[in-house]
Length: 425
Image (cartoon, rainbow, N blue to C red):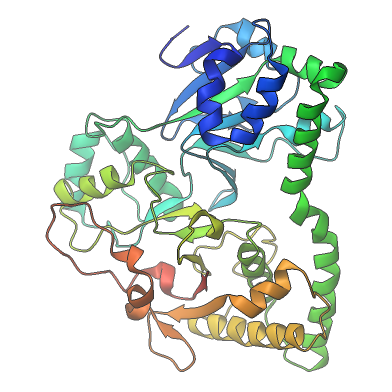
């Protein structure tokens, strides 16, 4: 076993780390005071490593005994002690970010309370260390500049495609250029913990806490059937008034509302102290080795609620990450027409919410329509749309550069902005 990757520890050894990221959980477990037989597995994952691939647990260097101990569910109970993980679905032409698991968040709770045979499809997604949904806004299509990256980091393929840029970042993160050795740290709970949670009445406070967390994590998805009914009603209204939008526009609108209520991640350039990866290292690689002409603005999947201060989340129709993607790229005439149509649908939806014709009072959807700002963006000037060149006026995070470098221009022509929605918090 590689002691630098995985360690078998007790609660006494894990207590302080858990207390730092989740003091409520630590206090509950302290009252129980589990014995040394209740083992924990502390695992460090480098950036880009898969913790789960097709829902199969990956612990590099772990002996078979550890893997067998953790096979009590497809997803064993765990908590993120450092940095973040991204749950995502990988399709042929795109990556769909589903959940970002930040420090102090438990995962695998639904699984320990679900029956062995449940409705939860577990083989449709993966979990990465750090951001899997990550890309540069400026183009990286200069062949000579990319050859320098290839030589320095052993990168095989040049690509501007958002899905494939992660491979480039992963190679950079695993090189000597990444002197900080960014990693995530996950703490897995052994099957001995689960046996006590299920059968020991002295552990009831921990069991109650886990139930509460599972209920909290499932809130939006329990509401989704009601949301679907509301959506059907709105869609019927749209056709009744003879608007006849393409179905993709309706799906995008539903998705950005889901992002707005913090049920799904959007994209943001706020690195949040490198929570999602060694962002400054990536930027330095493109400044020093590639010699990029623009600010190397890096976008990652994250939640609006991550930032306590003013923050923005972006969704691009040109790089669709909608879960309901039945109609992705179908019925779309061009990006400018598409974003205008979504804007028109949004205005209609908001008006009906505020007039109480869509009855979502006292819900996050109602608060979203009242308090959040939505901007509809394109790289070309058009009435009612925000020009991409003006985005940094409100969102200065787009201009973030590592210290010690000369100022560069923000790249306003990114295809990501050719039909984009920004949600302001």
